[in-house]
Image (tube, rainbow, N blue to C red):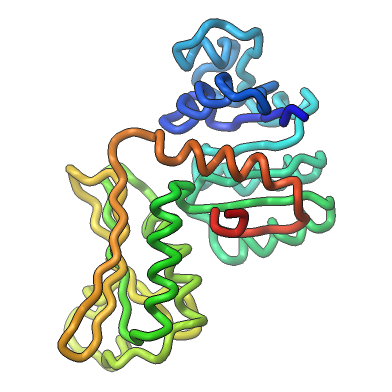
Length: 267
């Protein structure tokens, strides 16, 4: 069976790579696409391919008029939640590649997905190697209580921390043992230099750097008596690493109802 895709953010950095990959696949097809800046153009032509006859819509509402199975969203943090709820209300399964959603947002999305008997798979990073970094860090945190995260990205990235770092912190919080570091509330000086805490209980401190030369990197630093372990993922300038994971998610998301977070949920 061919999976019919509605692609939101079709002309973005990852969207174009997805368009090219889906065009080459034998089990998927793009039937609708969304991009305000390129509305009216052929989605595959914008991606550098031959025209396929699918015109880009300026809004998701227009795109959803075309029957589809899965909506993939790679838009902006301020748009993705509304897109997801709109797609679920019309019976679409959803893959979320956009970061910046809160725990409360995800809870609302999970409720809407279950109400509509749809699946949602969300990941701050669909790269296979980034998923492995997260898995290894979760395993290490069971043995080493002190862990903090350093999140690197370019100067134009607007959300802090990145989705990769946020997801990692939220998963680490419930499983880690209490840190030996002095609590932030007991510190003097400029407390903000200790980063932001995420992942209650046992919040994980995240330190976000935004500067030139970085694309996206995430580093889990674990410290024990007289030794230290660093687990790090670095992304290059190409969007290619995220494509295979996103397509795996699109092929799998119809197999369950509700929200699953992280590519490893279907690996």
